[in-house]
Amino acid sequence: MPKNATSAMTQDQPSGCGIDTCEPQVLAVRNGKIRLTALSKGHYPGVTIPNDTVPGLNSIGFWDGAGPQDWGLDVHRNEGIEIHFLETGKMAFRTDERRFDLRPGDFTITRPWQLHKLGDPNIGPGRVHWLIIDVGAKKPDDKWRWPDWVSLTQNDLIEFSGRLRRNKKPVWKSTPEMARTFQQIALCIMQWGRPHCVSRLVANLNQLLVNVLEIIAAQQPVHRPDRTSSRRAVEVFLKNLEMDQAICRDIKTLDDMVKNCAMGVTSFTKYTRELVNASPMEFLKQCRLNHAAKQLRQRPDISITGVCFSNGFNSSQYFATCFRRQFKMSPREFVSKQRSTCA
Image (cartoon, rainbow, N blue to C red):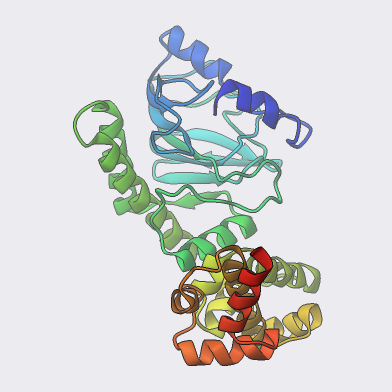
């Protein structure tokens, strides 16, 4: 993150500990205690890359520390999702007042602004990989916005975000495939500047995110939230449907909706009716129609058929019928009204 953005961010960040200064790490490199290879933006250590190169990737790299170390990272927060992977050695890791002893093959995940620390108080020997992806969260409860280079499907991104937000388990066991992906990412960083290095890095980053999603999905225990948190999960999901056209378009079934809130159909339907006085699929249709009306209002010259399909409707006739039922006029009449208003 650029330094000026960092100073602006600190006005909104949670109190207690500030954004990572990286000073202990920088001093350790300067004094020859570790060998660091990294790409960075702003204050993070490493080779500085432009902000428009893999936007949102604020820091990525690895370090090698041989033998006992006499330094550790301070307790800190990062503005993005941070992943550490311990390839060799051992390392203490702290987050949310819990301590973990990392072993080779372990990886950690911290959410934006989640308090954490490597070393207790000092780091251990080994090779540590890391990356920080900014998802636009200036506060812990902000909606996440993944960078455009992330190629997971919309449904997978919704699932990934939901699982990470609910995650109470900061340390996970990697797979051999994930370890190989980190090694390929390290090779991309070491060969930075060669032809196609950015494309290779992006391809490997997306593979890594799929690895992480699959591991969490396989290892994460079934989530059984209490009534308050369940209701809140549904409330947030329904709000996302209202605000995000792409989510409305890509959600196809009730099962898709239930999956994103990690609860049963009966509970999800019950909370939806309590919150919006409609069934889940009826509310989804209402949101799609509202998004369609917004498009037609903003661009009266746009293709009505195109608006129909871009909002998840499979039939223009069905779209017209639903539109008339909700807005008391056909899409064409709605467009004509907008044109006359603008004239």
